[in-house]
Image (cartoon, rainbow, N blue to C red; front, side):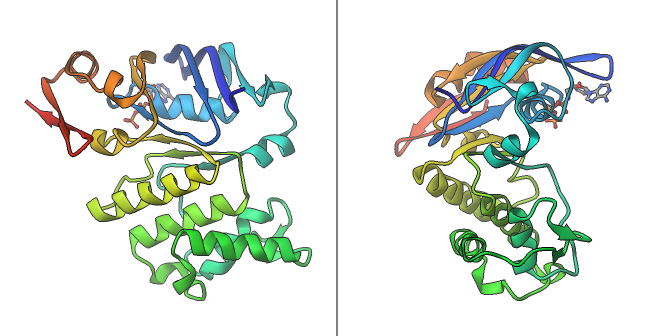
Length: 258
Ligand SMILES: Nc1ncnc2c1ncn2[C@@H]1O[C@H](COP(=O)(O)OP(=O)(O)OP(=O)(O)O)[C@@H](O)[C@H]1O
């Protein structure tokens, strides 16, 4: 059974039909990328999957029941979300920011815990810092970090909640090539530990590293499946309106504008 599922989902953004009849399934232990041109409906779909958009028709299902009938606490236990360009508190210590991932609702002014951390909380924070390679600056303030380091801290905060599925909207935006690859590498490691990851990605060569792709165009799924079935010159021309070449290089797909 899929962790999260969209069934014939229609969502309006204002009066615009941004998502039109999308069927999609997201599994634990898989890295799924949502791709498509600007305005294709990727972010709207992602927010709808999290229950943050009103659906016009169709439904989102979480762990075998409609999301609309799933208590918020249960949604928060299963799903974590890293929005596009989400700011972190500048003057807070990295360790405290990551710990926020554990304490939804249990923090005074968002920074001072109302209840003492349990040993499991401490352990989860430490693990998240380790796995995102942020332990080295745990005691620093966020304002002292680079963009790529901040992104890793934001990821640590999300992992700290120990979700089953992590949804990320353009996590590699503003990251240079090496940070982008590094982030994908960290996400892949989490997937190998059983986490489900769903990421909106613009970089098609990074998306080619996912297990499964959904290519959106005008709010509809134009193609879905493993990268080699989705990243074809025909699909990419239909979605982006440009001619591309798709090559295999050392076992990886590379997309080249023609
Ligand atoms: N509040 C709104 N009112 C009207 N139209 C909207 C609103 N929000 C989004 N849209 C439109 O809905 C469509 C889908 O937007 P969405 O942000 O989901 O696309 P996207 O694929 O994530 O785009 P991008 O890659 O540029 O971030 C776009 O055409 C956008 O202009």
